[in-house]
Amino acid sequence: MEIEFLFLALGLAALFAGFVDSVVGGGGLIQLPALFTALPNAAPATLFGTNKLASIVGTTSAAIQYGRRVSIPWRVALPGAAAALVGSWYGAKAVAYLDPAILRPLILVLLVAVAAYTFIRKDLGAVSAEPAHGARSALLAATIGAVIGFYDGFFGPGTGSFLIFLFIRFLGMDFLRASVTAKILNVATNAAAISFFVGNVELLWKLAAVMAVCNLAGALLGSRMALKHGVAFVRKMFLAVVTVLIARLAYDTFLR
Image 1 (cartoon, rainbow, N blue to C red):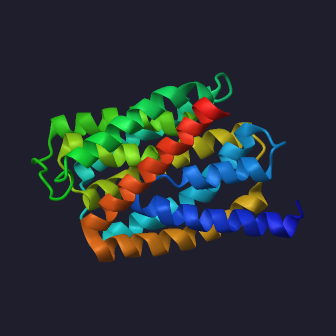
Image 2: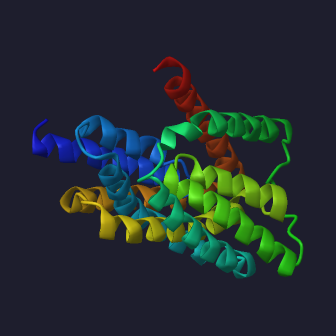
């Protein structure tokens, strides 16, 4: 594949990934397979690290865009982000010792459960039902951050969707509040994974820079659309992304 076409194709994938990721997460479903398809001979850890470098720019931008219009629940976002930072670093470290594909069947089952629950509960995330956040909420957020952070560093696809669902289900947020909180944790998980990869893996810096710019453009567009159209739009996007994730993981698990 010629280098110009390679950069163009992966740039377009990053643009679309940034759009999807800024709304409900799941950009890794687009960006990571694109990297593996375009660079089949590269080391998996190199592609995982390059993907994180491209993603963190768009995720950070989306968090800033949401934060200007939606109040961020810092009492849960900060402990969640701190735990996610630690979990993601250890998850990235585990990639060197374990095959992330071993998680596919479990993640597939969990995604089906998430989709079914969201379809059945039409009111899920429609309005905020948050309690006054105290020590219990902070502990819940830290637990969610540690578990999903490890998953993001180790495997990744669907991280934002899992965070949004868990914040709605266990912390009473609506889809917009859950999305902005998920972005804060996602920035932490990406930063932690990058800190590990930079010191231990060869990364494709030029490609990552091009993809980061494209991911940023997609994130700006996606976050603005989510803020303009509100909770109903985010819920529809959430269900669409989870459904595609299920189809992709089912294919990878049973048909490959």
